[in-house]
Image (cartoon, rainbow, N blue to C red):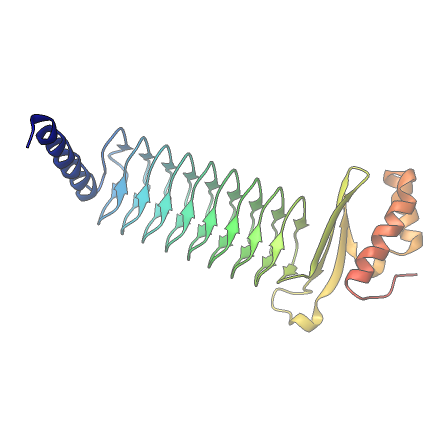
Length: 268
């Protein structure tokens, strides 16, 4: 064996040993920083230029890498992975097989778990839960006590908040806004853009535990949000006089479109 080959073998062995050391050390290596008040335990790893500080905990077989930040009293556990420049803060929890990456931020008392993914510049905060195989990405926000589960996706600049529930195979995208007790489980959502305003048609539950048979359609157009049955011609005229007198014909079309989508009669 030539000297060059021997040197190459030694380099390979050295790299392998360094990799083993990195995996064996619960706090990782490189320029990662773990403050004395934070806890990294079990087989968890913190590496790259990641930081774990305050009273945050990283445990189980979780990974925090790249330029990610975990702080406050946040917890990352099980086989969860927080990477890139993502942040997990306050008392938020990321666990299971969940991933938080890109420049995403999970904060307050929010939970991301199961095999859910939060990425790009998306945010999950308040006491929101994102679980199962959900994906939240783009600049989307899930907040308050909203819950997104199953294989649903929330992306674009969509916002899901209040006590809204998004589940099943639902896709909430673009500039859609779901709030209150909104319920979206699949194709029961219509959204569009007109005259500088986003409109969203969706179903809402009268109470948190109301059966699906009691859900009713709602139309949000700009800042106005009302049950679809209330969007009568008279009410439309009042809103146009208040906000935009030139929007009358366009609003009439939107109301008819949303009524047709939910297969209900146009209010008179």
